[in-house]
Length: 203
View 1 (cartoon, one colour):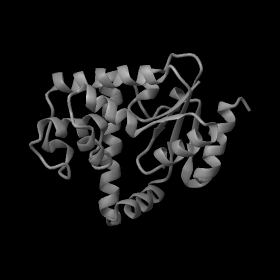
View 2 (view 1 turned 180 degrees about the vertical axis):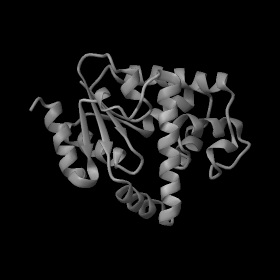
View 3 (view 1 turned 90 degrees about the horizontal axis):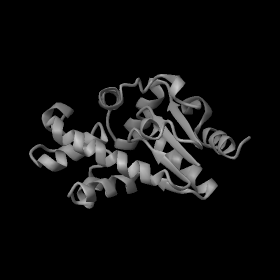
């Protein structure tokens, strides 16, 4: 069985995934996936992990690490990776996600829902929350102003949507791609995690 966690930025995807994986005693594939893709792409895993939460998307984080030409704190348009190189990183990511899907695991982001969408025994979960809630979460977590948090949220959500659209021809926001869509701002992470665990256990 595999659980994929897709999320709006600031909706608590990594935190919920940690709770679910710990309760089920399953493998959590989050930063570990970043490290493995970095290794196969010839990058320094430490460098990628340090940047993990600063860039708008996984591919763009790797893009900046590869180009080493622009500070990670700049906007997503500051260091565009050639399409051929970005495609190579997408294919590496797909391979690592597919391998992780061979065992009980909780996968966070990285378009895992698209990569393993047709597999048997997969539970696809989408986390959402109101914009004000996500602004509060991101501003507190990154110690930035609400205006900065809102801009970060819109940038990250936009680039995640572009990733799904460009490489998988799908709308990441379409609820039909998921078995569960949970509002963590309303439910809270504990209750949302409990619902995911119950669904994984079959009831």
